[in-house]
Amino acid sequence: MNRLKALPVAILRFTLPVLLALSVPISPAQSPFEESLHKGSEAMQSGNFADAEKWFKAAVAAHSEDPAAYMQLGIVELRLGKPDEAASALNESIRRAPQQPGPHMFLGIAYTQMHRLDEAAASLREEIALDPKNAQAQMWLGVVEMQAGHAELATAPLDRAAELAPDDLNILEYRGKAHSDVAYASYARMAAIDPNSWHVHKVQAQMFADQKLRKEAIAEYLEAIKIVPNNSDLYEELGNEYRKDGSLELAQKAFQKELELSPNNPIAMYNLAKIDIETNDPETGLQLLNQVISTYESVPATYFYLGLGLFETGKTPAAEAALEKARAMNPDADLAPRIEYELSRTYRKLGKTEESNRAIHEFHRLKALNIGISPAARLANLTPATTSQSTDDPQGKN
Image 1 (cartoon, rainbow, N blue to C red):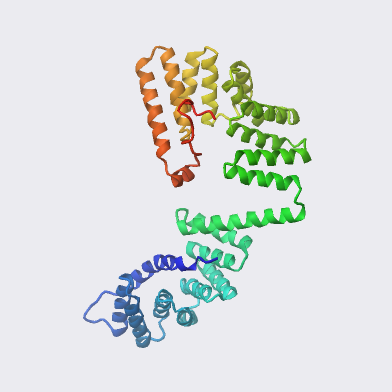
Image 2: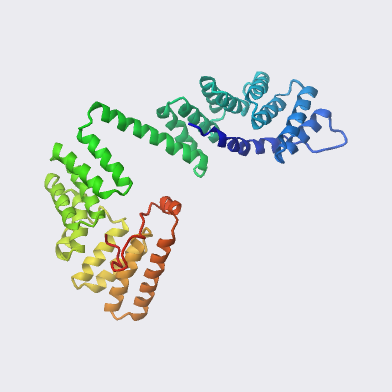
């Protein structure tokens, strides 16, 4: 994993607060040791690492028993790309104050850069024992395990790091990579054990689905079903892929098979209800939806489809109430414009021209907003792309 070149930024981010805490204000009575620490801290903060090294060496010379001075010297040696010298200084700091938080982590980083991974992991575990809430130490332990080829051991410290620092992009990146490596290792092992297993076809289908390769995903689900034709879960996932591919009739058949294999399955009933309502059989759809609505009462789409079905069966005031409830439930970026579109129709039928105009204006605003959402923002909001939808399909059903 050639990722260590970018990681000194994380070192500096962690280091600067430490240095600021150790800065000593200049005063007439300031000792050579205090002055050296102060000037070293200032040089470090300004990015002048060579001067910082000079001043921290002077601090160590002036007060050779001070553990903090050795730690600061070790940190600046890391920033100068001198892991051997850094490790020496940090070990001196630890020898003088073995329970001090900080040096063990930086020593672990130095050993990582020297590819002494067992020693790196041991040092980082020492730091975590002293400071369990140190997110950077947890992250580095995960990085070391990944460097050592132990992705399965990296996930726990990286998960813990993400708990402690949920918005740290470095941590989130490495955490995702570790879990991905573990998943792919499991899939590779599955394929090696039995390449024709239905499990392997299912995993391949899910991977294709993640890439929005619908036809390929459907083909893999069908292969899996050939092997285990009575697995209701496979029909559910097949139905979802047919639906996303716009093949509503085939999706309906898949969900019906799921319901046949798993009677009273609320997921199958919910999926069938949505398709019935969208394919001009609202009465049947509403009957199914009403059987499972309590299970999905916190889902905005439930009230969207309830409103759509009620509108199509002539129950317009009830449709208005359901759609307005869906609107108030913070729907995602794909569903929100569909709700506004159906509300505009409902308001128009009720003679509420002003409300209808506002809803159709909001529909167009949300559709335009969706087109402009960046891929990163879509990922953050877990919203699938909408730019490929036809302007002839204002609800975006497919």
